[in-house]
Image (cartoon, rainbow, N blue to C red; front, side, top):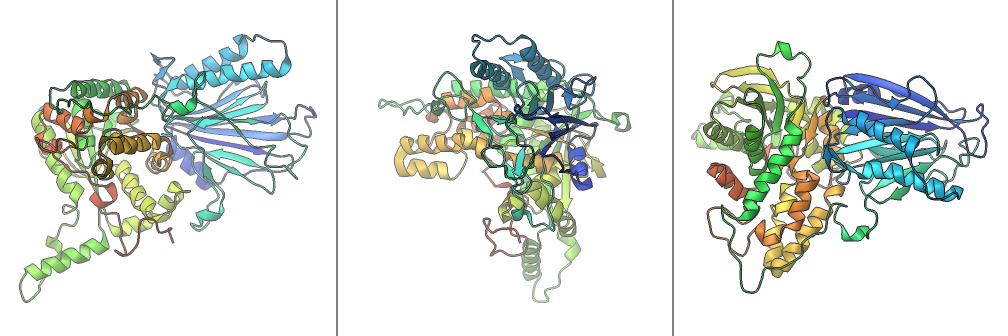
Length: 597
């Protein structure tokens, strides 16, 4: 995980990066802070005294390779040349796993393009197009979550973007008055929580964007939108991009044969295939993680934590991570619960009612946190993991958030989730923000409880994506009831197609604030492609509602059974804001779509 900030300013304009933004960027990347500046002249005016300035800043959270790769990546011995700001994880490039530091490998490839790119024409404009394609092909070849900004000096172009599924944050803002353009991992300049007037937008994950600075005017005055309008380049080339869902693969729209099909069972091929896909995905994401700083101060080796509600998706990840990881390493299970005044008032009322006519209430005896749905489910699944994985040092971290603490962090969370600004965004942001912090009471393998514990893990695993891929939302059975498998296929296609437009940028900003990197095993490109290739009835089985587990996400539930976790296999879907009780804290009448006041 890293922080990125790039600002293009016209002559005479100075952009000051605020101390608050610097703090947020350094929280994302606490291991190194670097900055590179380039003078940008127009292709029609090489006067170095009358030029724009491109200032690029990177912060680094070092999780790949055996050293801290200093960023921005550039030719350090000169004030000219190309520059790369990289935030992400390239798990594979051109289909091959990446060993060592991925940012440095991408930089090496980009430098190779500049030195060795072959062109097949002598026509200048076509030569430029071919060179641009070679650069685009480097980023197209990457599998994994990322965001980047790349200044290519020779062509005077800025390339930037987010991966196909939008798993890393990158936002853009253009000042219509001065012509200034800013790209950043987190927004800056928010004032008093009024985020609506600041003009920031998420960079779409639908392609790679190219900003041509070759025709810049001598000042920012009168700069039209067209002059600084980035051009989108497709992730896919050589075929019609519309045929590919999320620029990853074609969706299998086939319907069950009229002659019938074998209902899903524990021995179905898709269950075994899903298990192997998850193991492959987890192996990339949980192995070869360097020890966290100050690891010598912790009595145990813990490099990975799971955002843990105790539900199906996250518990299967924890169970399979156990099979992949070094047996000596621990796994922290981060379970968050909130003091919700509205719910607490109701619990007190119920408690008083049950205590007879005197209505005497021993408030201290009411444990609001342990009554949260996700806390109850989490402890049950923790016990199940201990039973099926003896010897693995799973630690259950009960992150309890008093209402006063929620309020004290409210403005910070609002700033991080911006430009998302509804009550639902805030309630989800709270849950992810405090869970990622990883501070709470820790139950160790031997039952010992450590009241004040902070997880040392810098890598977090999230179960996001399983509902979209395998039919886990309530709208999926509704679609089947309405139009059979044809309706279900259409609904699944919509969900997978929207993955890149989901709120992953928001979630990334909320969690990375604590110097953590969240990884999504279900959103590995190869697993997503496999899920799209697999027919609907081999993932969820609404035609056959009987059986040991419910039909939604049945392939994943059967995998949980195969892994000896019967209780987990039968857990029902619950949204995080309701499981952790961050929804409707003040009033039950507030809707999720209500704008934050």
